[in-house]
Image (cartoon, rainbow, N blue to C red):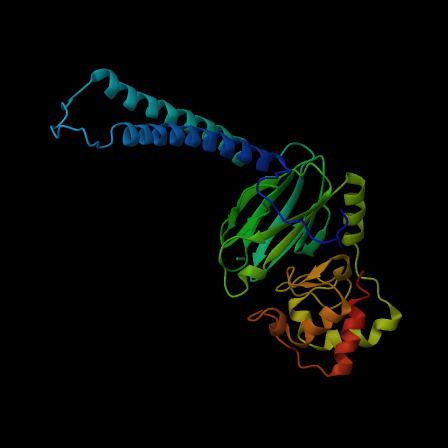
Length: 317
Ligand code: CUA
């Protein structure tokens, strides 16, 4: 599925990656056992209520009281113990398979850094830095190290793996292995401030060759379009450069998303708006209008300057 197409609804019932599949198998197994217990206990209860209900012909005498029955006591002690033991074993097996997996040779390594309110993705091997849209190849696992620049976030792409919390001063690990090329939607899953709900993330899984081509294009510096010089001058004369990096220019901030290849992304502001010139313009004019509380300030540029900056940004392919 192409990046620009309408987003599919992510479903935990439709896993398309090894860890997510393991989790679903375990969940269905636990649900199955729980359902069986529910049906047996509920069924016995219904039988008891219906069959032994009070009737007009009752003599009103208390029925015989039975105390102690070793076979019954044993049965309802041992059977639940066995059930719990089986659940324990199966859960442990899944936990080990998912959480302690060592990256196999050829696994892709990506550093994920949660920020209020966007995601930073760093590919150390490829020399790529991008934001909010994680590109990975299909056919080989991607191992993520999860860090936070500020508060606790949670990285969650339901079809690829369970949630993993993202803490300051701690590195967490998780991995994904999408089976099919396509767009997988995710979301920060831990309340992290005003714009937690608009801390979306997109995972784009592509065939290996396509992924390599993407990474090669992302690794390069921004190409200066002569027609965009005016906008570049405005950009470089403002505090924009303290927070954003544009490869090959003086802009080298790290507080905000890297903009070197901004136009290769389908959305801006962590999925809060499509990446169109109109949305870029609205965003630069007043980020608060799109994401109230966003940490990017309105730069108070004139209309003409904003037009120039937008024109410049749209050359960052
Ligand atoms: Cu980040 Cu919620």
